[in-house]
Length: 541
View 1 (tube, rainbow, N blue to C red):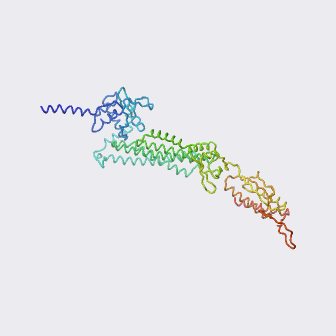
View 2: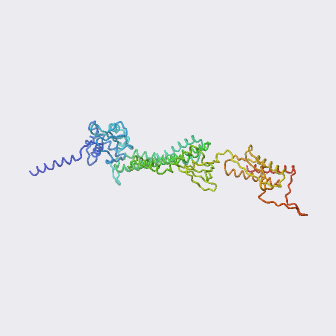
View 3: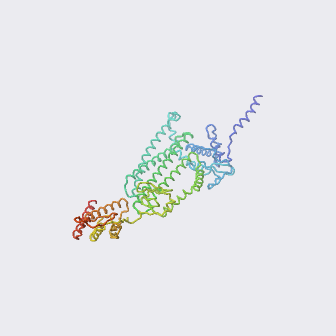
């Protein structure tokens, strides 16, 4: 009697324990939990797991349910049930064909989803229709054949892994390395051909950059083969989860590196093209575009890496946008400088390397940034001018001049005879005509006036070279030729002085210089100086 009473007490408790976890299809979370729970080793009831498949015979539904579970495990897709919605009327507002739908892994496995049919949630018809193909891509047909051919000795456990898995890892790594070498060389050749077709030149520096670009492409190919084959080794979900996390991070980092090098290659090609053009804006755009594109690559790459760690990048991006707007409103000077930068690029008042004068700053433009422009003065001092102020300044751009004008005055002594002054002026004109770096159709050498202590001769010439150092060298040649002419003719330059005139003492010589004004001697002297000047220029060439 006691045994019968005990049986009546224990039997209901057993039924309660068996029904403690029921098939629940009321919402996305419950459906996915039901599917995963009843396919665990300790709770293996595939018939109940198959309840999440709608409209198929039980045997076929069990096969589909097991394949879905194996695909998720093989790709290391760990399900976080806390993030799955538990609302029965969950509505996906992203814009899919069916509104009542939830995708488990939108980026890594968008083909697997659940949808509401009537009042219950099941795996979607798209998932059921595609699962056989997905399964074949994750676990190729030859995997089952190889596994069946593995002898019993291959299943021996070594350090927590079976022997055949160790062998598989070694073979996989060897295959990945061979693929890396092959893809690296092929990618380098292809990139080299493209570079030659675009630039029509062979550059050693380009080859170095292309090799750095081909290297990560080979690594990406190696990672892709590991990503493709590794699920076939049939490790546990925990192992696959961490392996694929590392692979995805490495792949993203390599892609970041590829795009950074690609930006460098594109900018190098663009720079080589702009060197052949006369456009003033091209040279400025090279560093600006390089900074913009590199920044975009790093930002998007960082968002991608954060996504692998479970960070909601959409929320982060929205927060960054709102925070950036608030920061921009608080930093009005930065906004002004950005507008100034845009104005500079639209007006194009200068380019990199131009010699400009802006306010109290005079120097060569080295870099145009987002916030400021860097100008290096002649004494190598660097000035950072905010673009908002620079866009409002009056800018004198010497780099836009057609010629460099040089003007000076030569002061001769008041006692220089008129004939000698005329000969000296004509001699300076001939020197300018013989000068290899002066403009021959526009120059002036004239006796222009009487100074306080000198007779002033104006020298106005133009140098075709816009380079500052070449201009100074040209001035040096001109000055030296004029000094030699003056010395040969006996012309003396005046300096500020006061002359006191007194009667000449008896038997004292006159202190005034003696000038030779014979025309033949003066012309010969001028010709000798010109011949020497022309010979000197030929030697320098």
